[in-house]
Image (cartoon, rainbow over all chains, first blue to last red; front, side, top):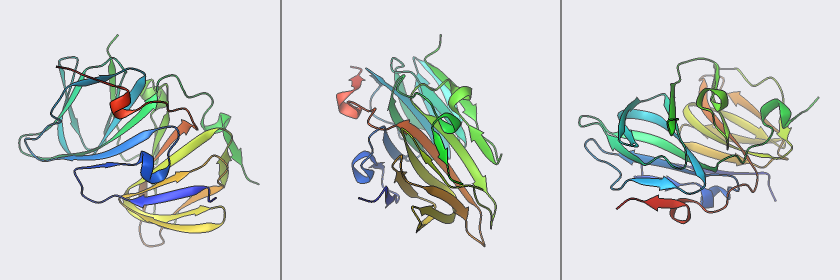
Length: 118
Length: 118
């Protein structure tokens, strides 16, 4: 079996990569909210850390009741217990990636995990 | 301690988020290669799965000797054993995120891990 898989993500409101790419260590979603839109609920997690990266546009993350403004290039980690909701700006949509991983699951990484070819 | 942390990523050649955001389940890097540039080595991993997302521009991933063309919106999973090297196109740079997670570390996710607020 090939050591890789690939998918092209278009402009859908939400694309989930776990099943499309056969991921085993993360769920990753690409999300678009139109200007004035929001995820329609507040949520937290049991075991999973989430990392949000704003790819385009701007908006606001409300985390434990605190407003966190975010624009393209901003990256935000939210601990499992953080109660979060994502809003697009009133005058601009927001496109973001959400990376969901199990907290405390990473051991060695980069130089400690890499095998460099000669 | 707050349940979140945030960082703004600029146009540096490489920004690593693990320490900046106190990540516990992933290392995430944002990378820029200029037109004609490449990561200067081939590498694989011992335990970690990597997911690459092309944020802008275009290039080519060589995985186990196979050319995989990639442009903005493409996402690629590489298994730990995959021998990989990233190249920008000759006529365009590439900006991509690399998400490094431990293989097989994710248990429940999304609906199975979420706690929805009333």
